[in-house]
Amino acid sequence: MDPDNQTWISEFILLGLSSDWDTQVSLFVLFLVMYLVTVLGNFLIILLIRLDSQLHSPMYFFLTNLSLVDVSYATSIVPQLLVHFLTEHKVIPFLSCAAQLFFSLGLGGVEFVLLAMMAYDRYVAVCDPLRYSAIMHGGLCARLAITSWVSGSINSLMQTAITFQLPMCTNKYIDHISCEILAVIRLACVDTSSNEVAIMVSSIVLLMTPFCLVLLSYIQIISTILKIQSSEGRRKAFQTCASHLTVVALCYGVTIFTYIQPHSGPSILQEKLISVFYAIIMPMLNPVIYSLRNKEVKGAWKKLLGKFSWLTLKLAS
Image (cartoon, rainbow, N blue to C red; front, side, top):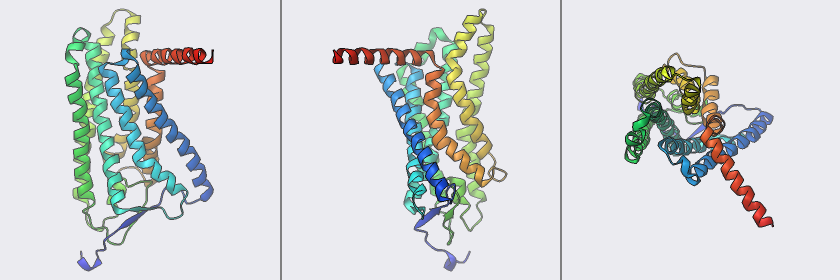
């Protein structure tokens, strides 16, 4: 490529979901409400786990990390998206775009690895319950959580670095709601096959490997549950995994479809909708899933609300 044709891009323009003003205002209201529910729901889950001693176990330690990831991931994308709904020129500076890609990609990787760690926790709880406390001790849980955060961050740092080294020439229009990696790579005016290989490798490491670990864990879990003689015992054993299994099915399914084959992946519109799903819908659903499908969490909510009602009545009297 002729060096004279290269231009330093100081900012990008995000095309977003729609150019119609009425549609953008409606989406602003909808996404704002969903974002506030996401933040409130996840912080309430974290607060509940902190306040209730019965939830001070490895499963809820990982759930606290998952809630932090969900809030952070949504915050890396949604506030900028809301601002752009109400502005005519949807500009994002070069460094802000790079930072957004780093945080969203990193937090996404952390979530997938965390879900694998949570699957291992459920495997030990169901398949080796007598040694659960000895195996899932605090030190191991901390190391597993740190591994999730470090692996996601390292992968994101490498992907962000090689993506923003690509010459963008004069093309600065990103046809997406955020600085998503595939959307940014499409701006490059050079061959990006090496970047696509890097995406494929990171997909295998941070997506397929955790997915295989989750799959193996649940094969063992289901096999163990089927060996339980009583139907009540099988039901209780399955209930310990129901919330996590629901989140895994939603989270892994859409991502595998999106990123495992960049060349034959979904359309740009589908990519945008998938990003909306992960940035807004999934972080909002996780607290709901764990609250509605988890007996211990529901019991903790009832106990906390009961204490709050008693305190309110006492203060009123």
